[in-house]
View 1 (spheres, rainbow, N blue to C red):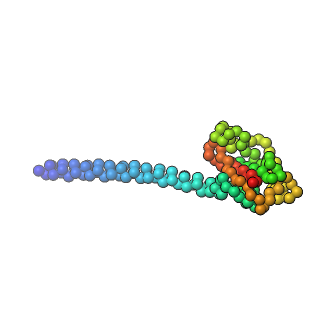
View 2: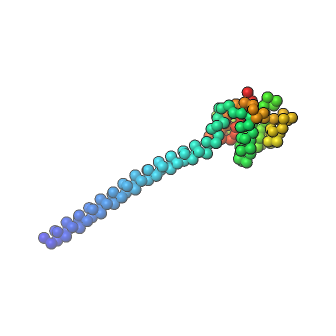
View 3: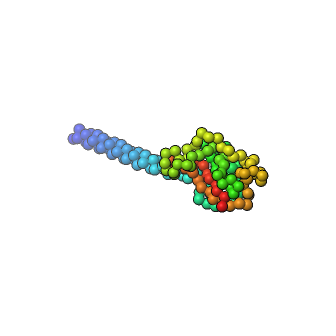
Length: 160
């Protein structure tokens, strides 16, 4: 009887150990899934926040002073360009980097940085005697340029 009692105690201990390990594994797997979900949500929030500074320029009308502020704000952005078309300069000038907008949106190469040097300067955008002069009280149509990877590469401003 003593052996049977000991065998039952050992069996119960093994059963409880297996049950405890199973519970820990199930909790670990569900925690892993929750972590993956949280990481995806965090990545979405980061993307949204990184693009938030551009939403004011996405298919909106802005003033000339906002165009000048955008030129100052984005001058050190790296692989980024701003195109401004004014009443005097209807062909437009690129600032900082030239962005490929000639091929249709969604096509290969659209939104990529080209090798040609940009022609515009902030000084000429502020000088009334220049072709690139941006009238601070003028109205401009603003559009954001995204490349095929959905990365914002530039902004275009066209005076109305």
